[in-house]
Image 1 (spheres, helix red, strand yellow):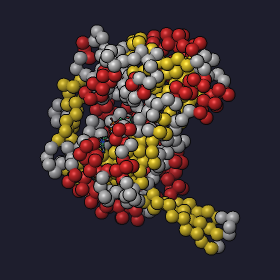
Image 2: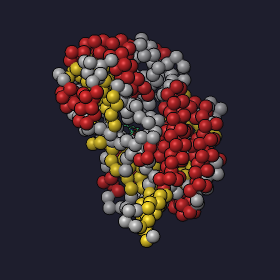
Image 3: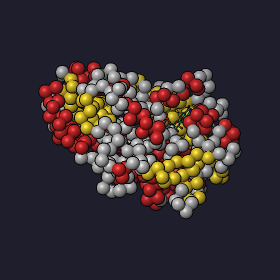
Image 4: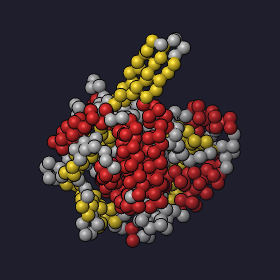
Length: 488
Ligand code: NAD
C-alpha cells in the first residue's frame, strides 16, 4: 500500500495475490471524520468486472486450499495473526483515523479480534472433523467440507474486527474468500490482506474488492459463483439478501442492527446501572450494534436514575479519538451525521431533550469534524422514530415502566432483537426478563454490550438471519456437513 507524503494511504484491491486498481481506474476518497480536511485514504471504486476477476481468482485457489491439510491451514493463519499482532500499533492508528473511534476503543477492537480468531483456530480442527462411536453399532465420521467461495461484506464501525472475525473461520474451513470491506474504512482491510499474504497464504485464497455497496457489494452478493455470503450491516440491506439469494444453493449469514434496551428496576444497584448505560450508549459514539439506545426504568427509581445518567453524560469529553483525554469521537461520515441530526430535528422529535440534542455547543475546535453531543431524550412516545429506529449515534431514549411486565413489553416493542440487559437485585425477576425478552443474548447486571468469544449468540427479528451464531462453538465456518456411517 502506498502512502503519500501527507499520510494518505492508496489502498488497492487484492486479487489473485496482486494489488490492483479498479478496472475502470475510478477511486473513492475517505476523509478523517475527526477532521475532514485530512484525507485518510483513496480506494478503488470497484464494479462488476473487478468482482468477476476476484471471484475467478478465488475459485481457482479454492480447490487447492480445500485439499491443504487442516493443520497447515491453521499454521498459515496463525502466522498471519502473529503478524497482525506485531503490527497492531499501525492497525490501531489506521482504525482511529478511518473510523473516528478513540484509540482505547480501537486497541480493544484489535486485541479482542486477534484473541477471538486465535481461539477459532484452536477449536476449528475438532469441529471440522469428528468421529463418533454410535449406540447403534455403527461408527460415524462427520466431516465438514468447504462450500467453495464465500463473499464477506462488512461495515465500518469495527472494521478490523468485522473483516478478521469473518475471514479466519471461513478460510480455516478450506474456503476461499472475496471480502468487500466498507468503503469508509478500507485501510484496516488492506492491512489484514497484507498480513495474510506475508504469512504465506496462497494467492487467490483471500481477495479484497473495495467499492460502494450499490456497485461492488451488490455485484458480489448477486454473483452466481458463490457458496456462501456473510453480511454485517444495516437491516435495510441485510434483510433483502436472503431474497436476492433466492433458489441459489448459497449459505447465508446476515447480522444486522439493534435497538437494544437496558432495563433498570427500582431494586437495582443504580451506580452499576449508570456505569453500564454510559459505557454501552456512548462507546464508538453509539455506533455499535450492541449499543444501549433505549433505557427503560421502573417508575419508582426513574428520577434518580435519570438525574445520575444525565450528569454522567454531561461529563463525556468529546473530541478527536487520537487524543487520549477524549472519551467519545465523531460519528463516521457526513451521511451518518446528517441522519443522526435529522432524528433530533425539533419538528420530528418526540420527548424532551435533557442534554445534547445536536452538535457540540461552544466548541468551535470541533467544527471540522462530524461531532454530535451525547444526547438524552426524556420520555419520548414509545411509537416514535427515536424509540423505534436504529439511529446509530450517541442518542439515548429514556422511558418509564410501571413494572417488570411493562418493561418487557417496551423492550420487545421494536422490530429489532439483538441484545438486552437488566439491572435488578432479584434473581427471579432477572430470569423472568431473560426468558421473555425476544433477543439473541441477555445481560444481567452487565451492559448490553457484554459477550464472550467462547459463547455463541445471534440476533432475532430484524437483527439476524440464517447461520448466525458467530462465536464459540457456534462459529460459522461455511461448510457442508455430510456424515458417513461405517459398519463396525
Ligand atoms: P450498511 O448496510 O450500509 O453497509 C454494510 C456493508 O454492506 C458495507 O460494506 C456496504 O458497502 C455494503 N452494502 C451496502 N449496500 C449494499 C448492497 N445493496 N448490496 C451489497 N452490499 C451492500 O451498514 P453500515 O452503515 O456500514 O453499518 C452499520 C450497520 O451495521 C448498523 O445497522 C449496525 O447495527 C450494523 N452492525 C451489526 C453488527 C452485528 O453483529 N449484528 C455488527 C456491526 C454493525
